[in-house]
Image (cartoon, rainbow, N blue to C red; front, side, top):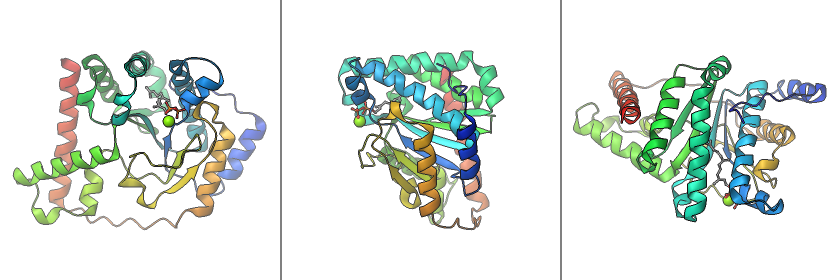
Amino acid sequence: MSWVKENCVSFFQLLCIKVVNTGRIPQHIAFIMDGNRRYAKKHSVNSSEGHYKGFDKLSETLKWCLDIGVPEVTVYAFSIENFKRKEEEVSALMNLARDKFKRLLDEMDQLNEWGMRVHVAGRLSLLPDDLRSLVSEAMLATKDNNKLRLNIAYAYTGRDEISRAASHIVDGVRNNELAPEDIDEELVSQTLELSEPDLLVRTSGEVRLSDFMLWQVSNSVVYFTDVLWPDFTIWNLLAAIIHFQRHAALPKAGENTTSDRKQQFLRQLESRRLQELQKYVNC
Ligand code: FPP
Ligand code: MG
């Protein structure tokens, strides 16, 4: 299946989207897509089939998010802990990713039409070389799209992301790009790969954060639902958004205190990240 599924939205669903749109829409939703293997077991198919169904659900969800007007979505697709699963399952998940990223590169025209940018956040050095090269190519190819940003947390944990940000900041101080007094919460937030979601959704009845976006979710509304990820529907998504509308704090007025030096450091960091991706594509 393609990355964004052309869903046929019924008149009633459209009406409900319009009603929900009269309230505040989360500008960034993060999903812990959990329950693929339980879904597979329920349907007597192998776990790999469950993960493929999970990808299909992601592509449906992306279209719903576009229809609703959510500009940023982050999904937890593979945790560093998931490398400890059976070799057979890890290799099936890597093959699924290979398959889908190849497809993404074949579907660039459609992706550009949707305005979708794909960012893979995680420790890319842990990925097999060919997959690392594919995801880097996908990131570079979509980097100028700005209608929907899809962040895929892959070979990711929140604590690892914070450690990587800390090490970038240490390098910044060592290279005199930053002064020690520049280090504050704002700088750490801006150095992380992922931004703060307004709403975090976890499916399958589990109520843990499982080391996902630990720094970023400190002020997010969290929504847990029993539905298994491949069974997730537009009604579950609208229910999560209504939950957000009932529980979100008022948005804070954004004051920009980032000094020129910090901005320069962040620009250099971004440019180093892009160079690294280019290096991965070339090798
Ligand atoms: C959690 O369910 C799901 C995963 C570990 C993998 C999620 C991956 C996808 C939905 C595919 C995304 C792929 C790309 C390339 C974006 P689980 O395996 O923990 O199931 P369980 O909780 O029932 O055991
Ligand atoms: Mg699970």
